[in-house]
Amino acid sequence: MTSGQECRQDSESEVSALEYKGNDSCNGSSESNSESESDTDEADDKSNEELEEKAPLSYCVKSGVNIQQHCEHCRIQQGQQEQVTPRRLARGQFWLKLDAEGIYQCEITGLIFEVTKAAVIQYSLLSWSKYAAYVKEPWMVGGPIFDVTCTSPSVLTSIQFPHALCLKDCLSDMTFKVFHFKSNGAQFEQSVDHSATHVKWQVSTLSPVGPLVQGNGNTPVYYHGVVILYKVVNDHPSLSFRVYVASNDDSFIKDVSKAIKNSGKKFIKIEKPPCQKLLQGGKKYRLISDPEAEITPEEIEFANDSLLKVKSYIEVYMEQPMDLTLTLVELESNETVWKAKLRECDWIQHNQNDNEPKRRTNSIRRRKSSVSFSEDELGNKRLKENDTSDGAKPKLTDQQLMSLAKKMGKNWKIIGIQHLGLSFVEIEQIEAKKEEDVNMYKFHMLQIWRDSKQNDGTAQSLYDCLNDDASCEVLDILKGFLKQDFGS
Image (tube, rainbow, N blue to C red; front, side):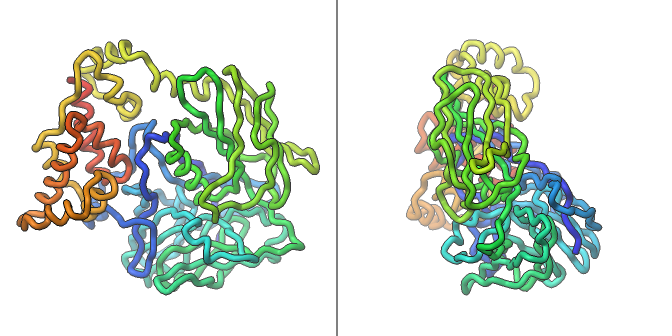
């Protein structure tokens, strides 16, 4: 079978606990029990405009598959598949238009699709924790799980899923299956083949699917590993980090970013290289700091925690801020599996953007009022940090609300209940108006939200509510309103 590319980049960006807290998955087929519905209309699918989300830096999580770096143990061959880049839609969805028969690999997720003719495929990364009740020993998670749909399912003949294991010289000794969740429950379907990087599956029907591997007590299981670092961002001079030791599984990595969002604290992600050595299930590892820091717990036993909702992590704390070196050591052999130097420049720029004195921020805002702001500038300048001299920012007008309503998708009721705080009764009352134009329903919903927020019914407040869960068009309009506010 064709194998995957040697290296896939980690496209997750920094996250903040101030981000929108909602579901991260996307729509499935009629048989799918995926985590959320799409908020993208059919017209969005037909658009040729680039829809990659560029939400403000400090308040955005970009889902994306992590590295599959070259491994000295893996015999990775160059595949024959064509590399393709999907468009990013809202809610973490990817949209891919394939123009002809062939084998194509998504550069972001690593998925490999085989089609018999032109097709449009939409897919998203899911969490394994939702399906934990169905995966029992001796089966273990082998790689990320996806929800995949296709305009013509019969055209999509096979999918190859990236896996997180290092098979070393044991390609023929491992047994893979594909977990397939349908409306009538979970099924473990046979894989067609597997390589050093992928598990191939013959498509039956489309719904949440992902690779599983059969554990064997006699054969150790090795993983390509990553160490995920987040630093707490606050006004305290001390240093505090969360350190996650994980397999290179993007569903796991996405769960970690979601846990960070929901933690109640503000974090910045610190990018460092992955593990230099393989992680082995059941082995114990210790994190060491130079200079010495408080580390809790001092050691951990590595296991694939993809099925767990709560991911374990190591806390590193230093009373005084300074550069430090973290080293992950395998206890039995005393072998270093990962090492990284953490420097003040890894996080200081973020602190400067977020914690700049208001007086200086205001002077910058006035000086730049006549020019366009970049996406990063918008992301790093919240309205609340720019309000001291000009007073409160203006509430959204009816005209602005109507502009937003016209761009909202079919799931406006879900957004209203889940993110704008409306009750089901209020939604029913809106629909009881029997408006001829459905956009009026959305407009009334936004009016209710704005009026309930009183003086905080602003573009920034609405952006914080919707964040990356609204359609790209809605977010773009809000960014336009934010530019006007910054220049006001």
